[in-house]
Image (cartoon, rainbow, N blue to C red; front, side):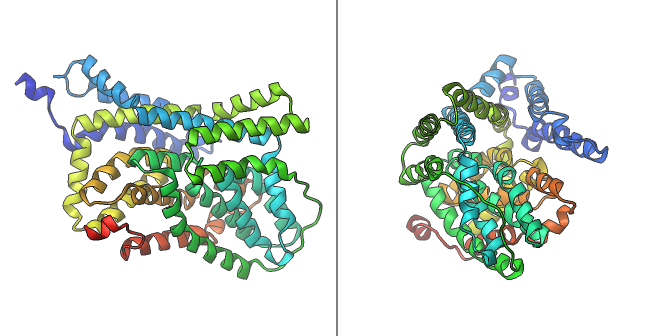
Length: 440
């Protein structure tokens, strides 16, 4: 009887700790939003809400010793894959901080604006945002760098402001979804066991038609305008981004690539004399500290999911989903929907991917879906759904610059809508499947 208690499977109840986390985090965020508080979703820190969920998980199954539960939590929280994700997060943050300090972000933005034809302003803003986000790996960073300039250009050239804002956000999520140093790419690829370069290639073929369609639509609706003023750039400051992107795509170890990028920012900044050694070190530290929260969350969620899995939750969910899934196509839609809904609910695509990845991996093994396809699907749906929420951080940031409603911006989100369509077409018609998948 004692053994049965230890091995007790809770089924759906296993997700109670995760539900506690979601209710506390999302519920408090909604409450403070309705109260009109700034930074509503930061009032109840997500890692504190997560800690509450972990406590609930540890209190479950009283027939099991607390030490055993803590061991299970620790084994999953500290597994090599999660620690590697944390290391890459920190290195990516360090690279972003160092590159910004030596003027890299500003040069990337200004380089693009310098070469935009006057009749190509809005699609140009979209394409520059795509490039910046792919280079720096963060949608928020892209919006922060690009939004003030893009809105300023739109106002000066008498362009459609919501249309321009949508172009910035669409481009920001293009790279957030694709970049080799994006936390979503890292989490999706490592979470399902895919090589990042393989995930990038497949994801790119799905995203490219959507980006082309969006650029055409922005060109048609953007009208004409003129850029005034000078946008100075230094091509050498763009070099670290190019090197990181190319070496990562070639297949070099991502951690090594990021270390190389960090070193290049220091060398270039010191040679140009625009930063001191201590400035560079400080910028790396600040960039890494920006990633501390998501790193801790990744570790804690991994441990919590480990307990949920031990209690039988993942097995129950996979069986519940697969019992309604009649074929591989339905499995892919189901995986994407889980990731997308969690992303919109949590207002955080990375956390949604971290939660979804182990579930997607289990379903993928059952239906012979290769890891790169799984990684692409959960990343795309997570990025697309959050990009269509009016309370996303990037949306709030850019609409704060001008007096427009998020809904006015969302109706021009051509890239996001097109990305969902191209992804559904890929699933529906079984496109981009490997020989192994086709033979099966």
